[in-house]
Amino acid sequence: MRFVSLKSEAQLDLQVLHRARERLVLARTALINQLRAVLLERGIIFPKGRIVLMRRLDELGFDSLTVSARTRELVKDLRDECAALDRRIKAYDEEFATLARTDAQARRLSSIPGIGVINATALLAAVGDGSAFAKGRDLASWLGLTPRQHSTGGKTKMLGISKRGNRYLRKQLVHGARAAMPHIAAKPTRMGAWLREMLARSHPNVVVVALAAKLARIAWAVLRHEPATHPRIGR
Image 1 (cartoon, rainbow, N blue to C red):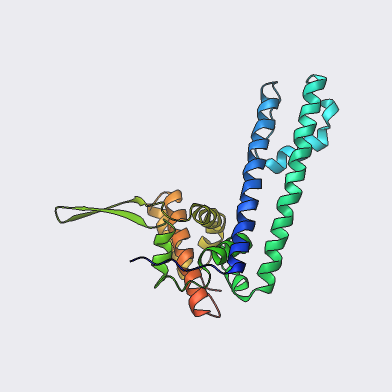
Image 2 (spheres, rainbow, N blue to C red):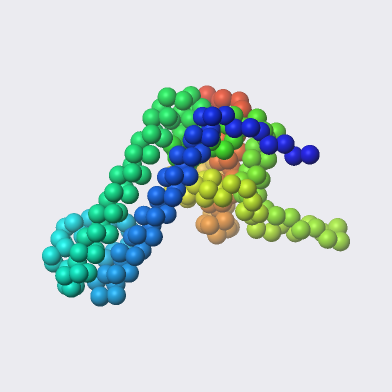
């Protein structure tokens, strides 16, 4: 039998906050894509990146756009809507940052390279103190970060990751691992040496997922054992 641990009221509140923030982030991404498409159809091309696009629009001004008056008003409306979404997302981020400073578990998790405030609070909302998992690999497997296995005729074949479990948390951990990988790989630590060896023989995307799985294991160890440092990463 597989048992599901009940979430506390604080975990449910955190979960709702993350879902609301993710909805706003997806809406902002769709809005940016629409704004870029409207400009691209009229031969106006901006560099990639949301922040760069918004900055260039502010620097150039809407009056300098070589489009019709109605399209200029539409672009301005889309820009204002995007700015409003930025403010709402920033408010959620500040709430998460406050929690990470005041909660002991969130503070320890956010100190792990590649975890940060968003991932720390998402982990607390999803797994609490990690007591539902006997070991770190169980958490990584629950997140869908471990390989699927196909066995037949006494032969075992390891496939790609299972992608089961919490899709949002898995995505956040992969993004965190991708951002932290260059920094960790440059360090003269066991984790850095492991990453350099992996990068020498595997595709960077494969290494990012492997690092995300390792970060999930470290997060479980921090939740369960509360170490003073992260031994697998080093100081």
